[in-house]
Image 1: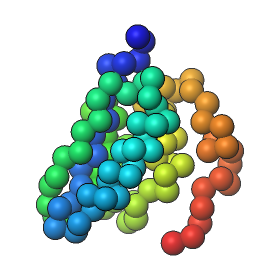
Image 2 (image 1 turned 30 degrees about the horizontal axis):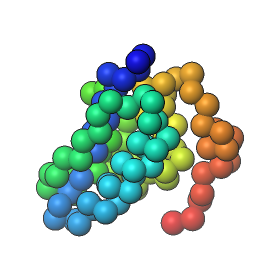
Image 3 (image 1 turned 45 degrees about the vertical axis):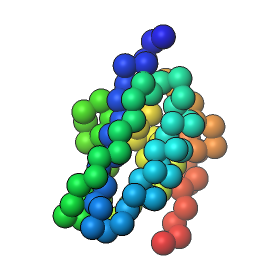
Length: 101
């Protein structure tokens, strides 16, 4: 199946207890991209790291952004790397991202 070589990796800090957040984001990505993702890895690290890679390319860094991603923006960033032609429905509309902290 085309696209099934795509790999996503979420690196999360164990010292910060970000496993649940990482697992939830992994679940969301796997549900949205069930036909496109062949492998999704959660990699425990330390040092306040929360990073998401799609096919080896860094698409989100908490340290660079200064925050965690909203799930809709993370889906868009991952989609742009693994399935650029895939529509995301309401998540594709401008202004669909929550501004709540």
